Amino acid sequence: MPTAAAGDPTALARLDGLVNQQAAMVAYVNDFLAMMLITLAAMPLVFVLRKPKTAPVAGAVPAAHAD
Image (tube, rainbow, N blue to C red):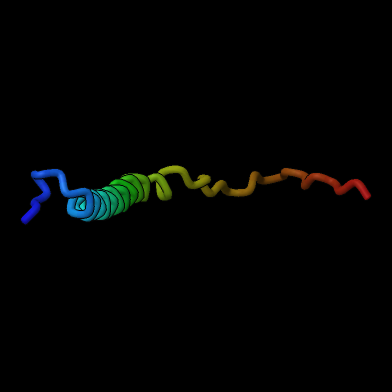
């Protein structure tokens, strides 16, 4: 009875396929974890980088439109 350790090409190919499938899944999960952490870290920037509300200056003349 051949085993993967003996070098059976079919068994080695199936084992390689399983390892590659699991490695792809782990990489996919890790990428989404990284994107989640980056998004959570960037969320406070929305509140910090807003334009400040300024009060209108008394006596200021509005800019004229060029028609």
